[in-house]
Image 1 (spheres, rainbow, N blue to C red):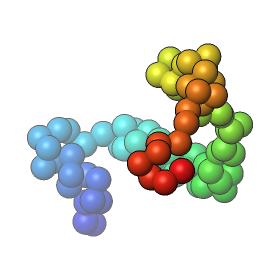
Image 2 (cartoon, rainbow, N blue to C red):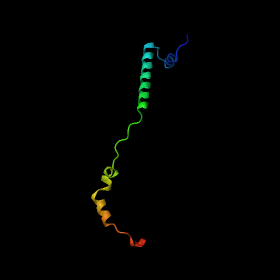
Image 3 (cartoon, rainbow, N blue to C red):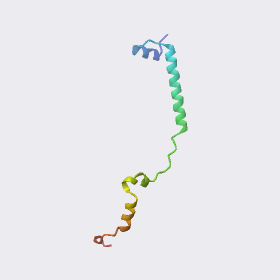
Image 4 (cartoon, rainbow, N blue to C red):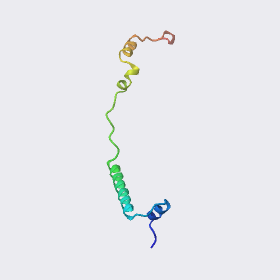
Length: 81
């Protein structure tokens, strides 16, 4: 009989062939494949709640300074306003 691919791979790596270890590896591969299929069936995770960019960048934008600057802003006379 011909040796299996797993047995040949073990001999190429310089390891001794152990059928019990090969069976354990096969079970782990099957389990990983089942978990991957289950994860694909679930689909992508739902997106989180939308965030307000102003809250996220409050440390850069500021809150009171921007409101004060918006009130005092005037059109530039050079543009004909």
